[in-house]
Amino acid sequence: MLGGIDLKAEVLNASSCTLCGACLDWCPYLKNLADHLVMPFDCNLKDGRCYAICPRTFTDWQRYREIYLHDAPYSPELGAYTAIYKVKSATPLDGQQDGGTVSNLAKTALEQDLVQTILLTGTEDNITPFSFLGTCAEDIDKAAGSRFLASPGLRKINEASQKGVQKMLVVGRPCQIQALRKYQDYCDQPGIDIVSIGLFCLWSLSWSFKDYLQETYPGLEIEKITIPQHGVEVLTNAGSKVLPTEKVKEFIRPGCAYCLDMTSELADISVGAFEAEPSWNTVIVRTPQGLRLLESAVDKGYLILEDYPEQELQGLKRASINKKARNLKVLKEAVDNGQLKAFVDLSQLEYEEILTCAEGMVKS
Image 1 (cartoon, rainbow, N blue to C red):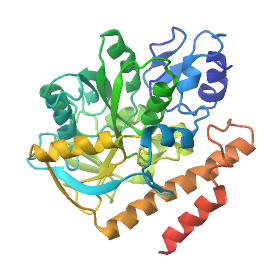
Image 2: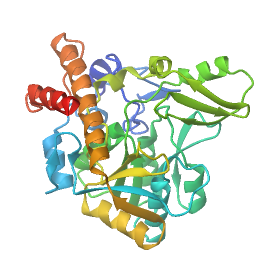
Image 3: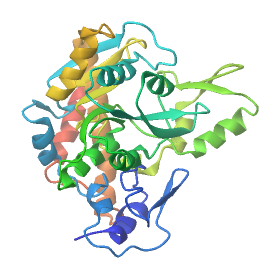
Image 4: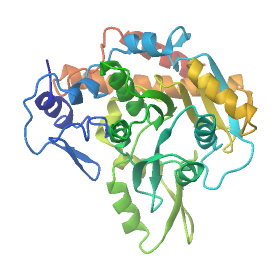
């Protein structure tokens, strides 16, 4: 049985931590300082929950697809899903990123009494993220927009449990959705009934990116950050500034290089940008719960739904499989060199098949 000392050796010391927050506030030995997770004193507890639910310890993906995604058809590029749509808010929302879909899904969940609280990530300076439990539309409005710096939001599940919450909506990055499913599987009692919205994610940035922005644009107020195809755009009170993508990539968290999931494949419903039109979202439905939530938002007139263009679907699949192939190579090399313990079964991933699929997508 494995516990805290193993988490320190295999995850923290290996710089593979995703800062999902799943292990925080359960254990007095784990603390976070800004975007760093530390264990000031060794914990010798065996069979620790922190190790069991970490997305960078072994994860049985096939098991979790069977448990949570049921009979949804499986795609090697996008995971298991039943439908994919082009979606946007019927009425533009203040501060929305892309189509405003997540905000409208969250509001629908509250209004329909599907959940009592929502795990959200907001910001006070339009850069630094902070996670909180929202219970009203005003809370959802505060969290509108994307956050590109990692935040340990899953620690709030413990807070929700202590408050007696029985139904909860979690909005999170792929690594957080992975940890959430492991948490649900690990608990030996029903606990909180959770619906999940997974976000598309290529990488998260370290908090040192905030220092870089302040040094690069001293005295300017950051209003919003977006990542269009031409680079990273920083909107300030003195106009728009564009940073080269390669410069921004210097601040990507090391653990992101091992992630094989771009579209939050274990979520009930996944939401990302629709690259062809900035005012729309890509929405992937994976479970009946996710479908009910989307249909309810459409029925209430909050969201507009359209068929997903085949050309854009091929582009999405290409981007997702390329991330898998690129990071799978990095992961396999780190495991082969003894730098990292495998947190997925590399034999089940059919390594060559994924690389061949990626090459085929590029040629097409």
